[in-house]
Length: 125
Image 1 (cartoon, rainbow, N blue to C red):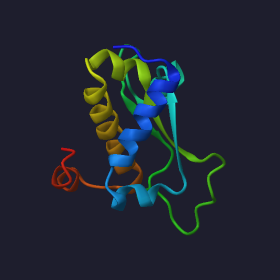
Image 2 (image 1 turned 90 degrees about the horizontal axis):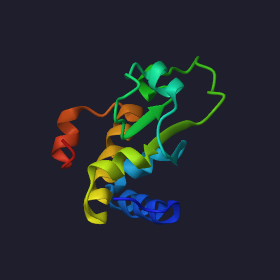
Image 3 (image 1 turned 90 degrees about the vertical axis):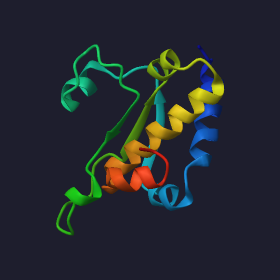
Image 4 (image 1 turned 120 degrees about the horizontal axis):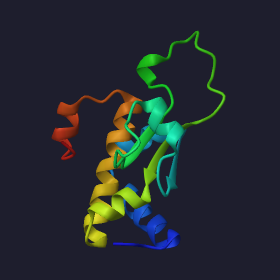
């Protein structure tokens, strides 16, 4: 499956809007962005092998890693959604949107420190 960038962005928007409000409301300081694929630097810094089919990536410090004394970050926390990896694993737009939704929720969980059990309760396990 292959979508043009505008179609993929619309799919991301629809998927994001299906995420439960209790999760979306916590994303005020997190940027959600689309890239075709992760950069070699992202893979290396995150500990993924270069051929890893990465669907998404949270880039920043989780809320659990921060304290009152931690200076504010220089760049906003970012969730990357990788278009080519997601397209390669999906056959329909409906399936793609579901995978985008799952990917974004898992990346938000990294930011918020949500446990796998809670994700399962919400239907994202």
